Picture 1 (cartoon, rainbow, N blue to C red):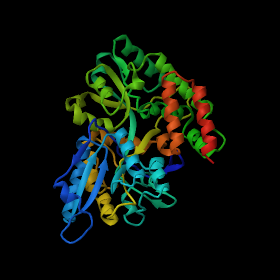
Picture 2 (picture 1 turned 90 degrees about the vertical axis):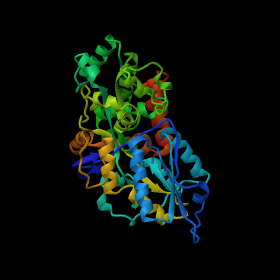
Picture 3 (picture 1 turned 90 degrees about the horizontal axis):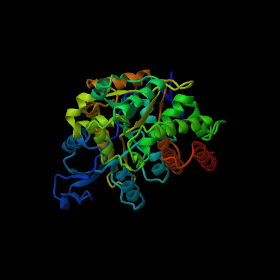
Picture 4 (picture 1 turned 135 degrees about the horizontal axis):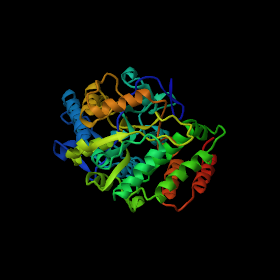
Length: 436
């Protein structure tokens, strides 16, 4: 039927959800701190679970409502919840893991990011502790390694071009389906003094969406599968060189906001360009819906999306999508209350939680049994159903060091500091060392 990059097969209608970010860190506590430090389980003392996540806004509210349901079922347990923006979270979590003080329950993305901590022996195996039939197999597989499961997915995000409908209408533009149409949109917007593409690439992963989509549209998912599996084609393949050339063509066309490689995503500067009408389009996961509903609710009436266009002579299918499982809820192996932590993970991924998540954040989910009501969720779910393939982010699929090099070289290509050929060569040299 439909195949997913890295040899993951789409077996059914997979409905998945997204990650978001916020410029602040939020600690949710509902009892005095001295009470929450009691975690020994001794008589008269409440046990404590620490729960870390990255999403703000309505997603955060959905998570905390699930926490409250869990607490009603377990009145002897307190939950200390901490929200941290995406990029800060990754740093904070790595430090906590290496220092031996990780949270009991934590947000992950599955894939290579989670596997790194699994390989270190830091994540609890929850195989057999849940009903696998409750989840989309493709999403669950992304948190399963060696036949063992290390996390439950609430959803998966899908990357699209999100745009300001009002600006398009004002300039007589329609969502482009081909590269020729896309470049004409860019040129028209520039002529009318609107930034065509908002990009916040200090964190590197937003720019990586472009490289992955260009490579997929040019060569299909077989290119990455081949490079990852060492099956003939590598990361120095002409498909990756051409993908880099497309990126640099956009840069030279002045399609992006000034200084994009130094603009952070979490601070929201890129979204502000959309909100204020300074920019028209942003390539981003559907987490942007959650951001809009939190930051600028009245902008939602202007918000719409279209898929990445086809490329001249491209071998890839235009139905293919870039996706990421997120959030995936996992448990630290160092948890003093592992069974309770597993119960919290299960509460965070029930149909009730998933339904609220979809309804309030415009997301599709990886939990079976949800009835899609939100218009964004319905449309993206239909795309997922029709997709020939869904490919995971390279930095969450490749070994960590190779994933970082992928982001570094892609950022360099955007900055015109290295050529696409140089970037591809560096990736292949590293891949030969790390992939066997």
